[in-house]
Each structure stands twice: as C-alpha cells, then as structure tokens.
Image: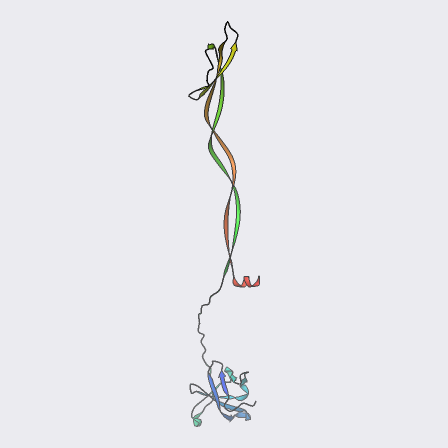
Length: 200
C-alpha cells in the first residue's frame, strides 16, 4: 500500500495522529510510526491501515502497538484502550396531533308534570216564571248563567222565564307521563403518533 509519510490517521477510540516515519519490521514488513496529538507514538503495520474516502487512514484496535519515545529502549507492546460509554441526553420537539370524534347518543327520559284542565258542566235549572223583559247573561262565581226565554200566550203577552242554564267551571289536576328522547354529545380523544400519521 502506498501511504504518504505525513498521512493523517484516526484510531478506533477517535484519537487523531500523523504518520511521521516509516520503518522496517520483522519479516520485512513495512511499519510506520504514528504520533498522536497528545504526544503518544505508536508503531503499526502499514498494511493494517484502512484508507478512508477523505484521504485519511483508519487504525483498527488490534493493530495498535505502543512505542517508547526513546528509540534505544523502544519495546513493542500491545495497547488495549479502555473504552467507556457516555450517555448523552438531548431534547427535540415532536409534533403530535389529536383527532376528536363526536358521537351523538340517545336516551329516553320520563317527564312527570301536572297539567291543568278545565271541564264544563251544564246544569238546567227550571224557573217557569214571568219576567218583565229580557234577562241578561250573568256570572255568579265560577258559574255562568244563561237565561232561556220563551214567549207564551196568556191574556196578555209577557216573557216567561222557563229555565236558566247554569254553567260551572271546575279545575282539576291530571298527571301525564310521556317518554321524551333527548340527545347529548361525547368527545373521544385519540392521540396520533408522528409515525402513524406519516404512514397514513
């Protein structure tokens, strides 16, 4: 693999470094020395570097070999980074919609009310006496009196009061029960998730 001597390298834990030197390893393998931004240096096999689309190279975890800064006492050793997960909590606004259903119900209710009624009772009262002239209709309390006149033949013509019709007005209470249908409305709230709304 043709790797520039100053190539940028990113390892598996996100550290950034630069390839500063090339070296000959065992079995004539090509190795390189990477210096990271914190000053740490690693010796790696060049064929373990993975080329990225942006021109940089990725260093897998199992290809990292730590290198002492003193070339005379440099000892190869395997470096195993300790990785810890960190929880990042963020908030975002999510639009939710609510659909309202209106349902009309019916129910039967009984009404119980007192109703006033008037009835007319007709009573005929015989009078059979002479009167001097027409007799007017009159009201006595709840009774309407209507005179009934008739001409009769006597020695002289006179008005004869045959009878009176007494009309009595009476009131009584009658309880009436009747079923009445009334309507009322009910609202049902149905949450709609964003995913469901998008699919519909």
